[in-house]
Amino acid sequence: MTVGFQVYDSCNVLHFDLRGALQILTGSSTAIPNYRCVQDNLLSGFIGPAVSTHSILLAHILGLYKYPQLLRYVKRVRMTLNSGRQFYFDENGDPPAIYDIVNWQLSPEGALIQVRVGSYDTTAPDGRVFTINSSALVWATRDHQVPLSVCSESCPLGFRKAPIKGQPVCCFECVGCPQGEISNHTDAVDCFKCPKDKWPNPQKSQCLQKPIDYLSFEEPLGTTLMISSIASSFIPSLILRLFIKHKNSPIVKANNLTLSCLLLTSLSFCFLCSLVFIGYPIPEKCLLRQVAFGLVFTLCISCILAKTMLVVFVFMATRPGTSLKKWASPQVSYLIIAMCFSIQLIFCITWLSLTPPFPQYSFQVQSIIIVECNEGSPIAFWIMLGYLFLLAAISFIVAFLARRLPDTFNEAQFITFSMMAFLSVWISYIPASLSAQGKYTVAMEIFGILASSWALVICMFLPKCFILLFRPQKNTREYLMKSKCALKTV
Image (cartoon, rainbow, N blue to C red; front, side, top):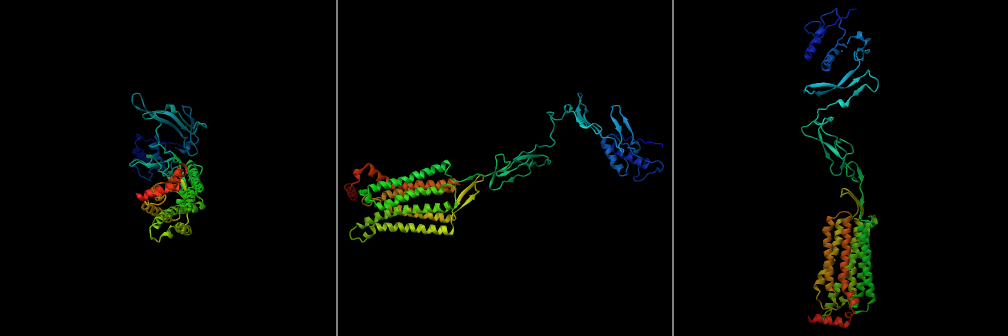
């Protein structure tokens, strides 16, 4: 068997490679696709150029004609090259994959040279198939460090990738997740929101359970308000004991001991009702707290209104020929208290029957869960508070008009100041409560309860207690009659 060969020099030009391969296939200097002019000589295979770009081009063309890049008759060839490396062909007529890894570098003269820095050799023993000498590498970067395979570094947790306009997809910038959202893996495309009962950690890499917030007895604010409420409730009780001890004195008699006792008792409950607002808002507390507040303050203001009306009726009853003496009796005062209290009681019962308050979780503040009482009907709450304002306003107007009436130890002036202080506290409460959230709204209402209760105690009873304890010479009938005559003279 005689084996021949045909050599074609393409000068490392791609289209010359293609033209030469087609001429060899045709057997003529003119390339005719899919036709071979030479019938006797069989074409067994090709040995292509060493440059991969050229050999890949020929492989695509010759593959269409089922030709292998070597002769099938050399499958059994095995030889040792000068470098000591074994060269052979496998059963498919393919040589072993042996590649040099080269690094393009500049020579001292400025020429571009290829420096061998490693190899890929499938004939090498295990562990030596792929080798590279990293110390021989010279990277074409300013700092000669390994260049990045992408133009942007990976985005860490808590950030998302944002594409840069006009740049490839591998170029992006890392943008922090917005408030309430996280990303829990690197190179996240999007951030996602936490469930409404959870909130991101500071790194925005995971969702944490939101803390539950309410005015508790254990925290400093709740403890302070609790101690203040309990301690304040003892003050009306002490004043009540002082009044009972001096019940036969002219000052106590002149101010209706029964009404004073009822007012002092209601003031003690006013201080204590603030305790219902502290602690976890269970359903029973939500039902009780606003109703208790409304009823005890209605009783308190009703007593003051009864005192005010009594001053007016007593003065009018002293006029000659008047028929209003029956209105100056204590029973009229009790009737006024009962009527005013009953109206508020009926309204509160209706409120609880139709739209009762209930506890709820509020997510208005993003970082916490607020446990609060939903009043059921805000309109009902403000009507209840408005009724208190109405009673206080009537007491203030009547007391202001009657402040100069010449009666024995006239209380109209003290009632005027007490109602002015009461109205000022609760008018200030309205904008403060609307601007506060969570437990601070509750704390503002407790502060309003304590401040208004203290205003009533100080304005209504401090002058009388001062006389009873430190000016007993003024607690005589002669002194009061002298003061009354002086008022009449004026």
